[in-house]
Length: 476
Ligand SMILES: Cc1ncc(COP(=O)(O)O)c(C=O)c1O
View (spheres, rainbow, N blue to C red):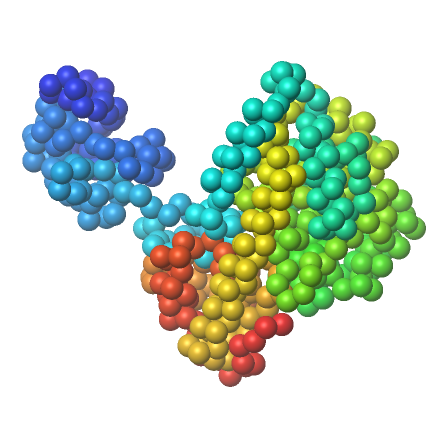
């Protein structure tokens, strides 16, 4: 066998590092290639060496390579096209891992997993134009390390935008720019721990990564039950020693309900009576469809609420740009924690976002996406009403996802049936945390699929939903 660095015969072409082990050459080669694609060491679109040159480089028969390529093409890992050789297939990447037991073996054609907005709609041209203007006009000091709380241009643009669009009470001095909500929460968790907070209540439906962030900082995370009106915040008075509560009041994730006014008042009463802190995750507050967005809770008591926002739903999660608006008393500690950890997000991205917001491009984009996602939402409801009558859909008033209620005991089998139809979808159980309600449902992200995939994804979803005798499909 040749060197693991396989070089093309002619000295041109592509190098490919493969570790072939074991006596069965073809199986070993197939496994090594599959593993390289699966782990993305070979990225989608990468052109592989011809079977002849790889065979020469590895010192094995050309047929062995050709057969391994053919097997991987049949499995969907590679593609072959006349004139363009053999390439790593382009696949839709899963946005969030489903539980291992439910994960389909092959990569599905359609995905309705939560996590991402429609990435094809990223406003590339407008973003580039904003970047050009921002960088052209930036002072020389913008290329220095900068302040840990973020560029003043972005904090100023955000202060104006958040006050106008989300009703947030703020000024630039209370805003800290972070690399995502994930990052902001880690910083706040650290500061809470240093201030001897031991317990942060979290909603009984939510994302495990954020709970883990809190527990990694040494905080306990008891569950605050979520019912059809959102988090049961009155229970905060019964949970022992809670110093803070992480909630999604504008649009509970993933159940989709907005916290009603009496509960908004009750959570503030709890914070005032106990000195507790409310952590308000406003991850998709811009997307309200049937009336104007529910304003941020933060403005009701800016000294007891940390407000978190992000571009992850409104623009793209890959930008890693988010912000928090802090009670004045917390600012120095959070800035210090950030300075120790990572200092700053890229100044150039911050300046670009500042320009993007200040020029009105952000509003324009959000408004366009709101229309687009609303249309998708309506198509989802219409398709279910027609093809799966009796299935109830909830959490429709806002956000990028809806909850499709299932008959008791059917969630896992529906997810498996979806996988068999090449559709990747999350069950609500994936997001349950100490919840006392055992409902069966799917959480459907209707925003993310490409236009070319949406109709197929919807058809696959409708095909796997079980018949029910329940309520007719409708918006709630
Ligand atoms: C509930 C919730 N909060 C916050 C976020 C934003 O996280 P980040 O800004 O780290 O991308 C998301 C994104 O998917 C989310 O689902």
